[in-house]
Image (cartoon, rainbow, N blue to C red; front, side):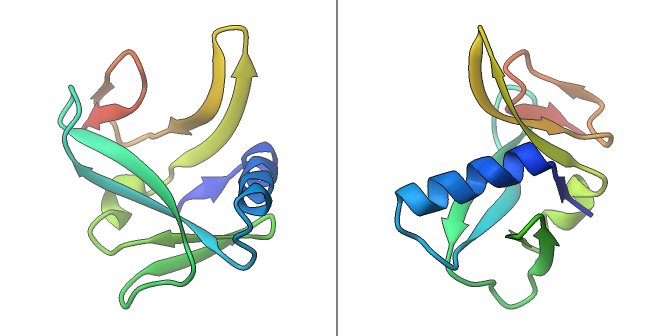
Length: 107
């Protein structure tokens, strides 16, 4: 199951409010691509699709499609803000390796 830290949840809520998307959730998926073979994707969606796993985390709905579920098992999504930049950071215990930017991985 995917988990979202409290800090990441607060940032998602802030972004949803800024885009006036009340009631929307966050879709997290995995697709082929990136320099390591697979890449993460995140987008706002109003509702789950058939077959989605729906997870509630700190008041945020997460939608994960059935194909992405095995790749995202045990994943934690955090929001980090450092001198090098700010953004969502994904910790994936299933990744055998990942690229330097952290946006793609191999499984």
